[in-house]
Structure formats: structure tokens, C-alpha cells
Length: 356
Image (cartoon, rainbow, N blue to C red; front, side):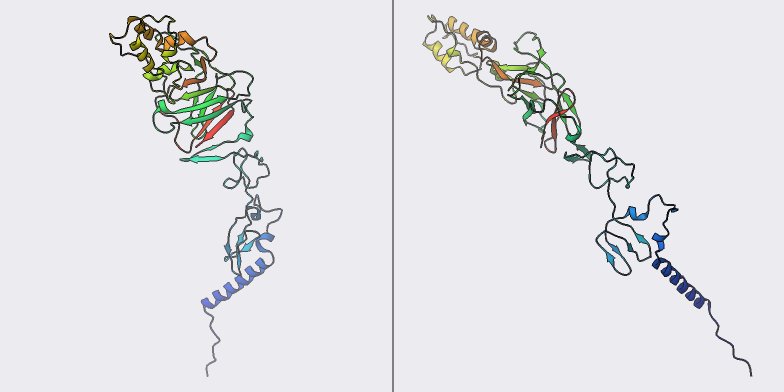
């Protein structure tokens, strides 16, 4: 009788026992410390994985870790590191998330800032006022108001700056700028203007200085009179044939109250009626034969800007507290929203800002 043969182990059974044995070895290695135990002084890694941790929820074989702290074991037996401690790169102007120096001990800690971050069309400006030395003009000059921004008409776009009434001396505008804190474009404020402009002649310019309490309306466009100038009691005459924004003050002396002769020969009732009807700061041109020659000469001599100046330029209240300054640009320079206008002093320091 033939002898009975023993069981034949297939290759599949051998592979099964091999995998079971391997799993047991992996379990024992992992249970005894595994990956972390292998990290010693001779580890080839520059930094242990526990210092590169990530925040978030991790699915595990035996549970889950949702608090982002401590380590957990992944489904594949790998290591899930701890939460990152984000440290801004040296020289960065922002604090918080988004930039990391990977906890490099050689990374310098940036200065703290309190400025706002403005982002427009991927362009970012950080107003880091704590990193900028305070301007000595901070309380001496300011932006008072603005108008016409973003309408595409440079003659209607303007920014008004003002010298504080508490100042003890005049401030020269030489070297001052208006600048966009978002887009970076800057414009020199005109520092030369005409203190007393005359029509039909070459005007001599001189340095513009703002006395305490005075202001300057800085228009983006070009000057209708050809120069920047200081307003006075008679400049309202410029408004008759020019369009200023904001409009010039129409405070001119009325012609009927001017120097009418004590013995007004030739100033008949018709002449006096005409004088009563001429509006302030408007040149009268409707001459008729009913006006006597004396009346016509009086109107021609005094009912205009030059005649007004000659009569009143020596009066104490002749000059206004406002300058009209023009940047001489052919297009608008300020955006109508998400814009920051900065007033910058001659040393490049920000004195005041307005945002909209």
C-alpha cells in the first residue's frame, strides 16, 4: 500500500504568513516608539518632523485628531506632525499667517506694525507708520477735503490742504507732494505762484508759503489764468469767463459803492440805475448812447479786475487766505474708490492721509 503524502503548501500560503510576520514586526517597531525613536542626535533631518507640524483634522486607524495639537498615527502608519508656529520672514511688513521662515532660529523678528493693508488689483500697499519717523509737520499741515475724484475731468478734481491755525510761522510748499498710497504715483505740489496776479502782463512768480490758517486748493488740471495764484478781493472777476472748481468767491465790491465823484456830473438817473444792476464781479459790456461819457468811463475804469485791484490792493482785508495751485495734468490722477491720498513733506515723510 502506498504511503500517504503530507500537505503541500502553496506559494499563496507562504506569502500570507510572510505578510503576517511583517505586520507583526511593523507593529512591534511602531509600538516601541517607531519613527520618533529613530530620531536621535544622529538624525539626517535638519529639523525633527514634530517642528514642521500642520494644523487640521487627520483621520487615523484608531480615532481622529481634530484639535491640531500633538501627533497622531495615520492609516498608513506614518507620522502626522504638530501645528506650525508661523514666524514672518525677516523684513516683512506684515504679521500673521501666510509667510513662514520655518522656525529658523536665525530669522530676525520684524518690527510690529499697526498700519492697514490695502489690496487693489493685486497691488498691495502697507502703511507702516510705526516704521516711519514722524514728520515734524504732523500737526502743522493736513488734508482738509477733496472733490471730483474719478470723474475723468482734471479741472474739477482737487485736494485742499491747510496749515494749522496754531502754527507760529509760514510753511513753504517747496518739496511737498501728493501721492497715492495705493498705486504709488506722486505729484510735486507747485511751489511757485503769483501773490498778486495781473491780466494781460507777465506775472512774476515767487515761493508759495502758507501762513497759519491758510489753505491751498490743489487742482489736478491746468490753470485758466496760466499761473497758480492767491485769491483776493477781486479774483471773482476771473469766474465770469473761466470755470474754476470750486468756484471763486464772488465777493468783489459792487460798482455802485465804488468811488463815485462827490459831484457826479454826468451820472444821471439812467447811469445810476445801470450801476445798481451790475452784478458783483461781472464786467458790464452793454453800453448804449443813453449812458453819458462820464458814466461809461467810470464803468470801464473800475468795473473789472484791474480797476478793482487798483482801488483796493492796499486794504488790510484785500488778500484771501486761499491759494489756487495747479498740477497741470491732462487727465485725472485719483481713483474714485479704494484710494489713499497722502500728503508728503519735503523729507518724504507722510504728514496726513485720506482714504475713500
